[in-house]
Length: 114
Image 1 (cartoon, rainbow, N blue to C red):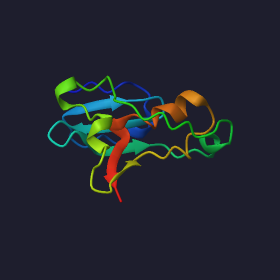
Image 2: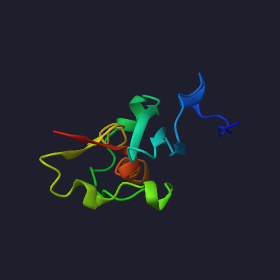
Image 3: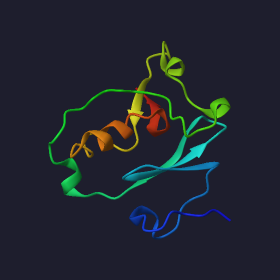
Image 4: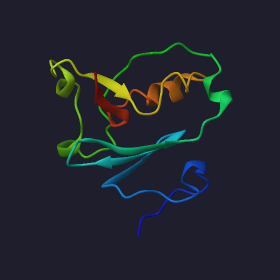
């Protein structure tokens, strides 16, 4: 049985299946080892989180919470036939403080996009 951290508002109605659950400060990710990206993301939309307090910081990086063999890396996006790193949980919705904004740049929160 998967233990879900208590008082996570985004999980109050349950969660879809995933290989690994990643809980960040204001969002949760269901990660796929096969595809090395999220199967789903859950967040609570709160206008207070998008209040402009910090600028977008663009610090894309690996998520060390994912086991290395299944972790997406920056090199996976280098020269990837025109694909960029697309946020699942938006950076713009997490501008109230630097740590919350920084967490949106973890590669576990990215999906290839054109």
